[in-house]
Image (cartoon, helix red, strand yellow):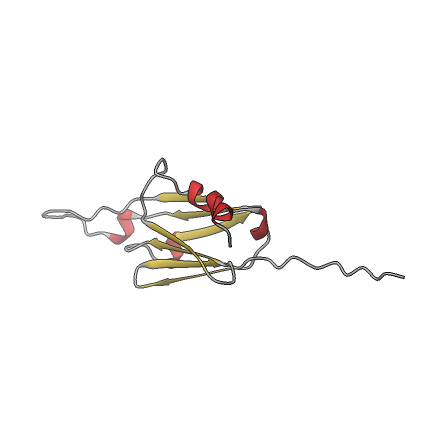
Length: 123
């Protein structure tokens, strides 16, 4: 994969965007996209992943009342709702997306869609 082909992906998570939750992006040799998002404190039922055309939207909704004790002596860990929008390029429209939460990290894999080859018979 050429560096210029990755520009669309890195611009999608530029310094201008919210840094919460922390997100890592990588591309495999097969050009599949791997997205790892720190979601400690969120259960699978709190997370939603939606693929809309060439955009993936990941949301986390934290229900504080249902999960936290009534009173803290001191609270340092902050968990809040989030929405992470990542713009993909056209090679990933209608791609297969798989996800799992492992040790507080949401692992998403977006497989690059194979382009069908046109074979033209001559003669």
